[in-house]
Image 1 (cartoon, rainbow, N blue to C red):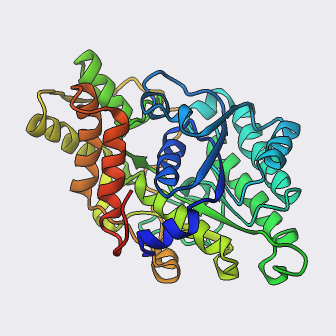
Image 2 (cartoon, helix red, strand yellow; image 1 turned 45 degrees about the horizontal axis):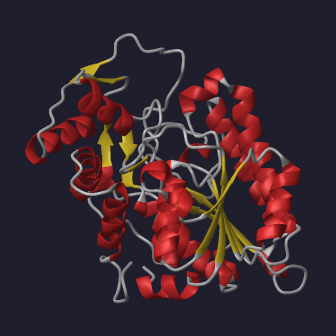
Amino acid sequence: MQSYQFLRDTYQGKTVLVTGHTGFKGSWLCHTLLALGARVVGVSLPPRTYRDIFVVTGLQDMVEHHEFDIRDSDRVRALMQQVSPDIVFHLAAQPLVRHSYDEPLATITTNVIGTTNVLEAIRQTATVKAAVIITTDKVYENKEIDYGYREHDPLGGYDPYSGSKAAADIVAQSYIRSFFNPTQYGERHTTLVAIARAGNVIGGGDWSPDRIIPDIMRSVLDSGSDVLIRSPFAVRPWEHVLEPVSGYLALGARLVKGETEFSGAWNFGPDHDLWLPVGEMVQRVLTLFEQKTAWRGTMQCDEHHDGAKHEAGLLTLDVTKANRRLGWRSQWDIDTTLTQTVMWYAQVAEDLCTAREVTLQQINSYFNNFSEGERP
């Protein structure tokens, strides 16, 4: 794993454009970039709720904030050229599987055309030296077999979300081969692009609909009702949001230094001990609430959910490439991951500290696992 000091030396003073910065993962990425000393510019749609981490941490006042739809190619290109970023992290997307059944066209145009617009704007902006295009673990043709998918495995997609992200991934691959080919770096272009695939991230400040941690928090903290779960035996590789964020940052740092071998696709995911059935994960979270807070909750299977909206029963990633070649690996075990997540919500709900304070505390705690170097 690259040291914290290496990341700070790389990002300090750099201009970084983050698309999707009002989202859950984008907000955590922005806070980490700010701690590393970067100038952060964000473009996204408005946050979904007043409780989102972007809102409650006051992130809008800490970055250069722009709100518009990335399907508007002219505005994407104009912003890219106005900002003149050194590095781009593209996270903006319609990120919800079940919502994609209700809004397939918006999902596909946002995820495919939006990604193409960002790549085209990068191609036309000479200052960009590195770009990381964030897709998902769901880009793989999922056969629900008991091994992790590797970067060269076939892409696919059962639902509109997964299909759109696989298509966006293929578009990014085509741009790498056609315009950002690492074999032509320094001759025909000076930009290196990578694709990062991760999924099932959890952590504080996520209030998205139809996600298991926000569903638990709404039940426990708001209504006191049972936590309804659709697929208790579906296995997911849970990881704290800071895990892939650290991978994106490590990847971007290598690219901006002109290290061509880091162009291409990369998986970021947890070790096997973080692969848990949904029901077991929910019960562990509820137990943590009982042990560490005054809040209580119970779990119940949702027998009335819409079974027509297919969701994967098993989907995992092989992260050997990132482990061996990038030196990246997950830092927190399942107990730490769940504890940090629960405590973020509990501390904010109980006014023990501000959302910004607990976010920075957790970033600091995470990077304390890195090699020696000044912390955020």
